Image (cartoon, rainbow, N blue to C red):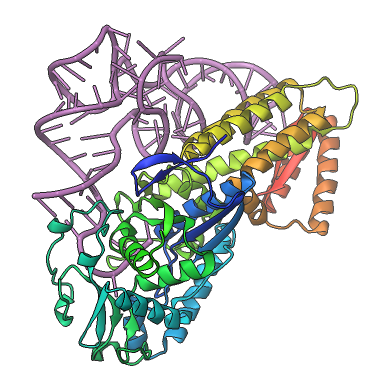
Length: 479
RNA sequence: GGCGCCGUAGCCAAGUGGACUAAGGCGGGGGCCUGCAAAGCCCCUAUUCGUGGGUUCGAAUCCCACCGGCGCCUCCA
């Protein structure tokens, strides 16, 4: 079966075939490290994590680049305001990014280049653009001349003539030939930027324009052209539009073949926004007692091209649904029996069906909602099977089901996260619990239910929840 | 003004011309199981897909209009 993805360039769903057999090269726009990323930022990163994991699930080798933007207006202004260097400013936020990244169970990309490590290469690209007549210098700055690049704006389906002329946003500070041209190199006097971001160039001291880093670092790590470039919808224009102009203008080669864009997450129906203080970070939510696995589940519950409304009520729902999965897996493990006399069950058949439906769903432009549906149908039917089998099924059947669950979780990554959150159970606690349960089993056998309930209460006080079943009592630690 | 998206049950969310008598999750009601629970299972919870027209043998799915919400339009994931 073939993966099909929606290409922003063509606005169509296309079959995906990598340029190089069996190997996929992806560039994913990363965070600007001027502050802590919020869960809306992670919605996009998580969508890309699903893409990455699913490609690996389909047996592709993946090379992914995720840049860290450490030089732009916001990092510079913050550094100046705090009287620190760019490195000093961004390091804590880079650390915070990786902490949240790992907490939400994102797989690590192969490369995390920082813009400030690639300034010489950026200068070279600007030089090539000037040489090719696609850029011009004015007053120490260099601009891209969009009139020399006929396909400019194709990605965003822009009508060039209707692009607004000279919006006021600081453009007055530049001496552009055309207000629609964009800056490649920012030179000249910029007192408000202090001296935190100044590099030498053939046009004098200055610093690179924002879009340059991605063109340069993508080519540096992935070559050109590469397979997939992705980011949030807001980047379609101008960021990705300009990346294409720079990279293709400088080299004459196509840049990226397939462009994927994730819609934004809303918070309580409104745009998440740092400036309006309308957002949550992972820390905010963890402090309120939410598990990262639930945050992950919520953020990957809806299709990436649709908006996702993030609410605390939604997070509560997500927590419950994760619990359902955890309970299911625990129940499967407990029901696994080596007794040869047991009758075969439908579990292997149900597991196969689940995997087929899961793949069909994700092949269709990463339809995660439908893929979750396939998983939960399996959970319901397998639970019914366990009911009928009296909690004891042949080991091979249980293994087939467990393997399917694990396989699906290779992509969703929610159970793997939740497992780590459950809290380690020490040997000491384990043996204490086992002893208590034995005592309780004896009490129940003697129909001394008062005693049995007292023991259950005692266990509950230490966070142990007991579930009785025909095959014995199960227990688990609930935080 | 330009480009684009969305409106499906109490909430979240798939489905985008015929196996829809509309997935799945959460919540709610009833039942089974249980010593009681928990978990699980079964049944019910949208005769209908923002509204009004139209196209079609057939529309939640296509077209038009209207209403409502959202995003981008030069440094926001």
